[in-house]
Amino acid sequence: MAADAVGGMVGPGGLSMFELFQAIVMGVIEGVTEFLPVSSTGHMIIAQPLLGIDPELPQWRVFLVVSQLGAIAAVIVYFWRKLWQATFHPHQPGWSAHIIPKLLIAMAPAVLLQLVFKVNDLLEAYLEKPVPVAIALIIGAFLIWWIDSAFRTRRRMEVDDVTLLQAFLIGCAQCVAMCPGTSRSAATIMGGMMVGLSPSIAAEFSFFLAIPTMFGASAVRLWKYRGDLNTDGLAIILIGAAVSFLVALLVIAAFMSYIKRRRFTAFVVYRILLGVTVLVWWRFAAQAA
Image (cartoon, rainbow, N blue to C red; front, side, top):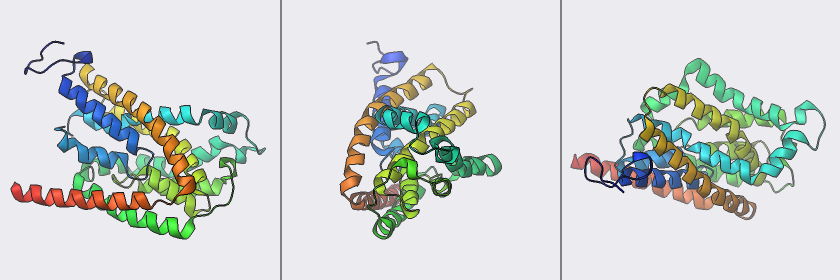
C-alpha cells in the first residue's frame, strides 16, 4: 500500500482506504435494504453525511442508483430457475400470460412519468435529503401496517397468475417509490397485495419488475453523469455493486422465508424508529449550526 496525497493509505484502483471503506459500507447498506420494504435510497441518503460523503459528487449521485445493479444481479441468480421458466416455458398459453408483457405493462407508468414530466429529475433536486426521507419512512410505515392488515391473503398462487391489469396497477404503485424513503420494494409488494396477490407472490413479481426498471434507471443516471465520472468514481461504484450483490443474495433468501410466515410489523416499527431518529438528529444538528 502507498500513501495518498493527504497521507492516507491507497487501496485498489487508486482509491484511498477511507473511500474504499465508504464504498463497502454503502454497498452493504444497498444489499441489505434494496429488497426490504425500508427504502435503500433513503438509507444511503441518511448514511452519506454520517460517512463523510459529499452527495453532490458525481460518483455518489450515480452510486445511489447504479449500486442497485449488484442487487439486481442477486435477484437473477436467486430466481434464475423461475425466471427461465416464466420467460421460456410459462405454465399458461398465450401472450397475455407471459411474464415479459406483464413486466412491460408494469414499467409503463414510471417510464411515462419520467419521459413526459421528468419526475426523477425533480425529486433528485428536492427530495434526496434526510428530512423528506424520514417523513416518507414514517408515512410509509403506517401504510404498510394498514395494507398488511386489510389485504393479506393466504391463497396459493404462482407468479404466472398475475394478470395484465394487476401488473399495470402494481406499476402505478411503483411510481410512488420515486419519492426517496418510500421504498420501491414496499410500494410494489403492498400494491400487489392490494390487488389480491399473496405476500410471497407480490414479492416475487416486485423482484422481477426490479430487473428492467432498475437497469433502465441505472443506464439513465450513468448517461447523465457520463462526462463527470473518472476512474476512481467508477471504482467506487463497481466495488459498491459487488458488495451489494453478495449481501442481497443472502437477504433475498431470508426475506422470502420471512414473509411466508410473518407479517410486516417488524419493518413498520423499524421505519418509524428510523424516521423519528433522523428527524431528532436533524433538529439537534440544525440547532448546533
